Length: 105
Image (tube, rainbow, N blue to C red; front, side):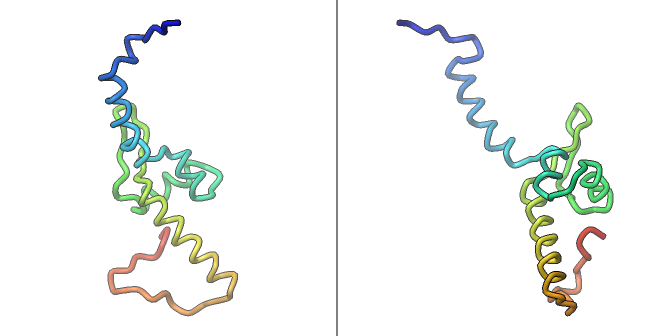
C-alpha cells in the first residue's frame, strides 16, 4: 500500500512546522493567557496589559495580542503567592527591592 503526500507534507514543510511549533508555544493568545491565569475573560488580561503587566506582549498583523508564556506564568506565580499569603492572613510586606511594582497595579 502506498501513501500519497499532500504538497504541504513535503520534508521541507515538515521541518518548517517542527521549527515553528516551539516558537509558537512560547506565546499565548489572550484567551489562553486568561485560562492560565484563572480569570474568566481575556479582557482582564488585556486590561493588565494596558497596566504594564506584560511588556513582551505584541500584536500580530491581524491585530491579535500574543503574550510571552514566561511573563504569564510569572504573573500567575505572583497571584498564587498573594492568594496563599491572604489565606494565611500574612500581612507582612513582601520582601522586595526598591524597584518593586505591585502586582497587577
